[in-house]
Image (cartoon, rainbow, N blue to C red):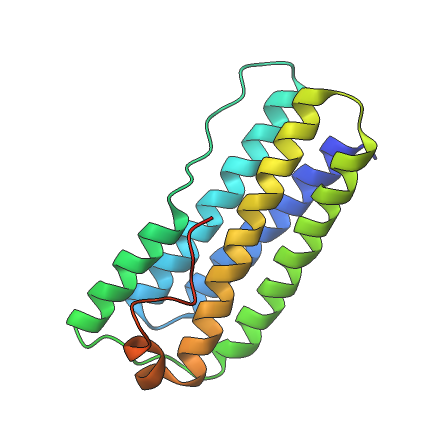
Length: 160
């Protein structure tokens, strides 16, 4: 299996994981965040597929962090902050998946010769890092929601 095929498989697995998590969640805001993450994995898949097919590479929507911040603000305004504490383990597993994917893309970017592929691997590694951050924020939020929301405007979720 070549790099692109493996990358597409990784992105498909990530999408499936987020969609399953969204289905299990009882919180509309969490469902929305998880769906955003799943949709982002689809974008990554489409990029790798386009590279493999030598077709036009689609743009990557880089607004995951601002979008998640808006969703959390809405959840806070609607008092929709209740979540199932069992979701923490799901988020930790997803976070491990994101870290593994990010490390894979960074490693492969060092190994490839094609500058355009190297650039795209680095870009998607950066995006996976954002996903890792979002999940870390969700884990913190689920662990200690009151303190987390009052903790200086999401300072723990920095834009890249």
